Amino acid sequence: MGSDGEGWFQTPSIKVGLHGNDLEPQFFIFFDVPDLVAAVARVKELGGETDEPGPDEPGFGRFCTCRDPQGVRFGLHQLPES
Image (cartoon, rainbow, N blue to C red):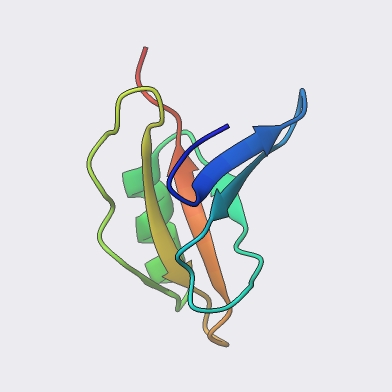
């Protein structure tokens, strides 16, 4: 599903995004969290870095990208409010 080089596929338990404009192929893991602001604070408390969380996108929720203390990139995702 999707358009313009982007989209996703999903199973009952996993949703995978496809981004056609990435500079190079990569895996980028996102972890679902119940409270994005609290999760960002915890990443920073443990020595990681985060970007600013984005706004709530209808039907998608909010997310931000992070790096652990060794520089490994990952993301955090909070489902949309119902």
